[in-house]
Every structure is written in structure tokens, then in C-alpha cells.
Image 1 (cartoon, rainbow, N blue to C red):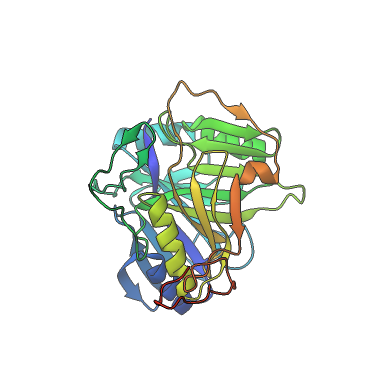
Image 2 (image 1 turned 60 degrees about the vertical axis):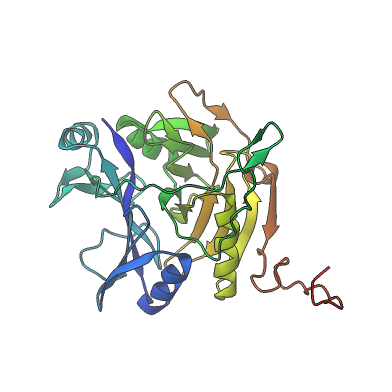
Length: 315
């Protein structure tokens, strides 16, 4: 079966107005607005739906408060839906595919993908051995426009059962913390992970974050600075993960949990062998800025801007 990635996510929230402001600032396009919900999409048509917490059409919540209520996985064809139906327990036919819940209690669905192919390019990078950008200045982004939802991270109290469920329908293990966390990708070849399941000592369930793919590292920075100027709070970032190699910027989200801009993750194939890691701060980040960078001073959050020189430039 061919699972292509995340096609749609749906949040259940308690403040539609705050979520509208946030996701517009985040760089998504608002395609439909009604008193009972908001529909956003990314550049390639990946959907982000915002609904009131008490919407009767939402799957049951796997934690209290605003949070992620459903993840829709896109597949290539109707034949893939049939294979998922045979492999996955607790999914039933729905209006456009399959719908159910995973062992962690998160609502899940499967449909033939509605995302569209797009032609966008990141900034060419000059390395010591190869100049990909010659007689051309690099790009600076005023804000981010996410390409798609790249992955989600959930806390679970049923790591083995939930990981086994996803592997039964074709997900592959990329890396793991023994007995603590599994990084899973939805196809043999692709980005480092589409789903990360983390079992804490407190054995809680819920959302940690939703990650949005952007073009390149420079858009991570531009998006993070813009969201800071808009008044939203960074938890940590920019930074870089040793696992997946990706650059990141995490922001607190009124829809629940955190959201992340990320770029430059590892791309794996069926030849990749999962690595065993031990949790620790040096494994989470090679480097990271706690609280982020202030979008106005361009310095670590709440840091003072350097004094102006006589020419008005900053030293």
C-alpha cells in the first residue's frame, strides 16, 4: 500500500478567533470561514481544519482542552484504501475513505490524497565543495508559507501497541528510544518521520506538536521572526535536531500544543537501518535558542538591540 503523508489535520478549539489570527500569521491560506469552523490550507493543499471543541462531528479527544482531534492520511489510490482496511483494525468506511482511531485514542482517517503537485524551490546553498549560487544574493523571507504538514508528535501511554498499529499498515521505523519513543515514516522512502510517538514516565496521552514543512532553513528563520513580531510566543528555536538533522522553530499554538517550522530533514530509503538513541538534551538539539529570537531587535528574545552608530547602522 502507498501512504503518501498527512492530507488534513483537524483541531478542536475553544477560541476560533485566536486560531484564525494565529494560522493567518503562521502563513496558511483561509479558504472557508463559518461560525462553526475555519478551513485553512498550505501551499500544496494540505488542509488544516479548526472546529469548536464541542462539535459533534469531531472524534473523541485524547486529552483535555484544545488539541488535535483527527489526522487524515493521504493514499495514492482506492486500492490502497482497500489494503488499509484489511490491515488496520478499528477503521470503517466513511464518506470519502476510512475513519477510526489509533490505539492511542487519536482520530485517524484515510482518503485518496487531495494534495496537489507544486513547483517551489529552496535557496541554493554554497558549500566548500560546490557553489550552487553564483553572482546572486541569497533570499531573505519576510514570513513563511508552509508547504504542508510534515509530521505530528504525540505522547502515548501505549507505545508498543500504537507503533505496531502503524507498522501494520506500512509505516517504517526510522529511529527509536528503547521503550520510550518511535520515529515512524509512512513509506519506505521519504522524510525521516511523519509520526513520532513518545511515552513519558507520567504515561500521558496527547499532542506535543504539529510540524509544518517550509522550503529551506532561511524560511524557518523568516517565519519564526515574523511570528515573533506578530506577538506569538516561541518555546524554543531556532535550533537543529541531531535526529533527522532538521532545523526547527517551535511556537505555542492556541489550537493546542506547539507548532513547528522545519526544513532540511534527512531523506531515507528502504536501505536505512534504524538507530538506537538515549534521550537527552544533546539528542533533542545540537543547538537551540530558548524563547526564540525577538522579531524586532533580531536578538535573543527580550535582549536589548545594539546601539546605533553615527551612520544609523548597527554594529
